[in-house]
Length: 287
Image (cartoon, rainbow, N blue to C red; front, top):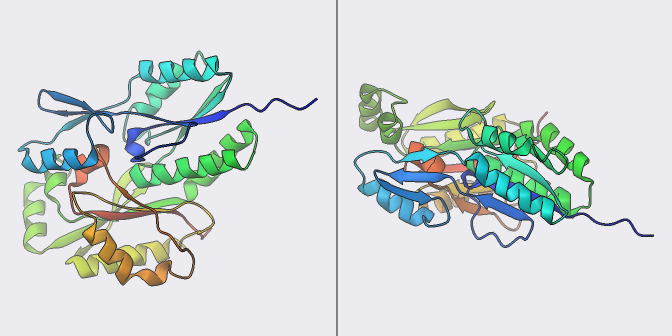
């Protein structure tokens, strides 16, 4: 008698910046973004393009709100009714309460749900979701997939070059004086997600030095493991800066892959770093 195959789903939040989802076993729950009194569901009634149009026009930063427990609970109920199982991959618990919401809802569904803190955001979270889907497609058992995700997520590196310090200033992350000095000197900071939190790795003067610093940080992490998912992304209304970076630094990947996956970064992270940023998320080939 053949063993019954149980569907395994991945549930994630819209901070993963996965758009155009056509997979039956991938569920994306929207984070709420508020511009003043206007409230939107990220990726549902607010596209990335419209978000940046509003961000550029707005005098104040929008406010983001975590996915509430009831949204996860509804998704879990559907999973159980389908006789399926679900792996939940959330935005870093140090950046949002979404992970906590996922766990609160999971208390009644411990037989079919496992929650994984991505310890990352945006492109990094995207890469972990892609990895989970690959493991599911390979036929690995539910618990083994969860173990692999927990073990390998620490190898994900997300590094990004920001175009402006203005949005970090608006969000109170840096002083007005530091933002002004950075603007006058054309300072381009390179940031990363380290242990689930945003960290500044270095600062360069001008875009060319910034791009070189970004590539240097990729090499310092041990390079890209091309056997696993990796994603390039950008913030804003155009990917022209990202395409220029890809062309100028093609030596990083031209002998390894035929296709580069690119993604726009939405409102959850875009709120804090603004347009004109580019980034890379990958599994490190180093130890």
